[in-house]
Amino acid sequence: MFGCLVAGRLVQTAAQQVAEDKFVFDLPDYENINHVVVFMLGTIPFPEGMGGSVYFSYPDSNGIPVWQLLGFVTNGKPSAIFKISGLKSGEGSQHPFGTMNIVRTPSVAQIGISVELLDSLAQQTPVGNAAVSSVDSFTQFTQKMLDNFYNFASSFAVSQAQMTPSPSEMFIPANVVLKWYEAFSISVFK
Image 1: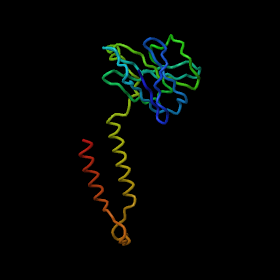
Image 2: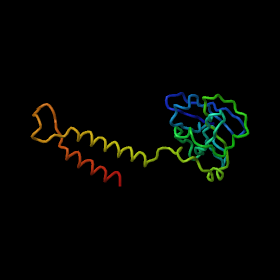
Image 3: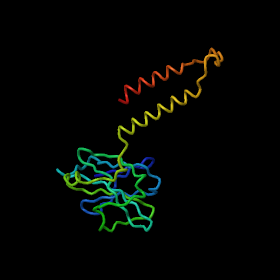
Image 4: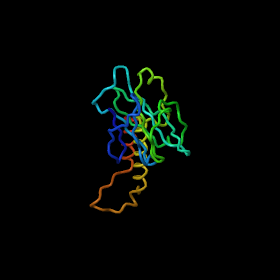
């Protein structure tokens, strides 16, 4: 029903069913994971009016699992990417996995999926820093990349008097790069 993907690792599709409506995936070597993708396989949809809360669990310093709500997947939103790198030192939240005896290893975290009513999912609040990169962060990345490019290219700027003629090289005036940068910034980052 579900799949779990971590960059550089094989896709996991064999979730361990720990209750009729609860599933977990093991994440060995979780300290080196930044993002995790949870998705529906497309073979079995959620029943009408149901979806899945997605939780991340890691062992605290005493080996006790700390569960944090990441978000959800539904038939209308069958996949989600969650940032878990900043969650490994936060506090836990209410979760439906508390009374279960789930076998775990100290260096293994888990992704838990709990099948719940959509109305219940809408009332839950995921941990803030689990949110996935949004369009705003892509825009920020692009802005920083362009700033870096302009600064890098400008560091090679020389005056016309300092230029050594070289017929095999092309030169672009720095003001042309600056005009392009400003025009691009205005049209894209409104």
